[in-house]
Image 1 (cartoon, helix red, strand yellow):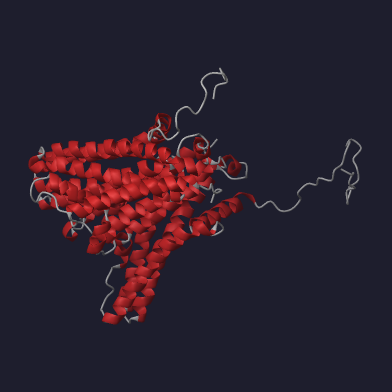
Image 2 (tube, helix red, strand yellow; image 1 turned 120 degrees about the horizontal axis):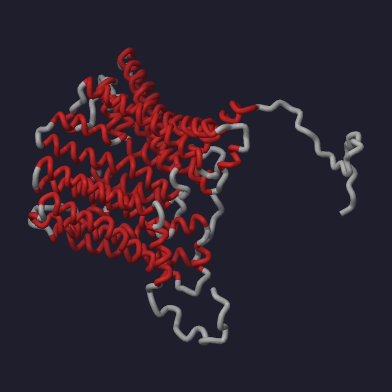
Length: 302
Length: 258
């Protein structure tokens, strides 16, 4: 190679043998908060395939489309039948479409964390000025945020449709607010569970199956036992059994506090006291997931 | 692999397609499926089923309708497909995903043999982890009255066969095989099947129930598919999926990460 002349050779210090023109970075340092924000926004975008290949956009957009389309169809039905209320309560919409939400979570939560573990990029994150808690907080917030977008946009479509169909404004606004609280809780709960499960395995395919298993198997088991308990006439047991699966937890909270009817057998709702237990368990599980994630990233990938 | 005795035994005295089963491939697949923590989730599901069965028996005593509800509504509808997805796609998906399948494909083993061996292992794992617990849970629930335990165990075994073949096939065509498998098992069979009666004709669960119906006592199980049609479809799905999976493996392209 011919020797290249550096275009802007700074004044050579006397104790330097070769000066090949490296310079210091003198610009502003954006710091920890900026890195955390970037990780958050990149993770949310990644959950919808934005900034990734066309193939990885298909599934999240498809599931998002299914959610929105269902809301659109419900609005159309309301308009054409001149119904006095929406066919589905705001708080129950997410519970009806739990399979779609579970699939979305199962597809995106491992995408968000498993690949960092498998390709050992976690140490690269921690070589930036972020701490473990920042990584966990950003990923947790991003997953919950992505789920919130998935579940709240259909509610907004329902609300807009309800207003266009001239349903009662106050009623609908109250319903929407209750629905948003419900899906916010659901997003935090599901996001936390999904991330904890998928952070345990570096294999994406296995993470997908594990997340689905954790969400659907307890639900199937709880529903089956609730059905049996109801047939046996043990209605008190029906209310308490709901504590053992994520979906029925949210269902219990929304039927106890947010004015919905539950999907439990015969629409049984937990009593107010039981409702408080439901709420406590929900918040406890969310906090527990956060703690478990922090614990996991004390060692993971290093 | 070893560098010893290059003079011994001239190669290619046996034809390469002599067998459909390759023990080394089987061992590798078995270890990929049940190695380390992966076995835990596979043990957790059947254990949960048996615990639920025991709890229900303690709560409400032996009852045929209850047994049918748990075995049909939970075991056959949720647990068997889930284990089928894990075992079926897990038998080949991770290898394709991380690219190590090329080392397997570069060996002088027929691709059909590889698929067939992996299928056998997947079926074995699915049957052991789904049909056997269903049988145990059935006996715990009502002591096999009306042949319910045996009928559901047979249905679970038959379903394991078809699920393994189908999901192994998914594993060869897509990197998102697990998701597609779950969409089929949860959305199509459970959700669409409960709303649209016609969708039940195209559901492995219903085909397996048709077989179980024959085994169980009169009226113990019900399926929306006739038995001859169910058996025909089961065989067709299993054979076609296995053959096409082998065919796909012959022209496999390894894509980059996403």
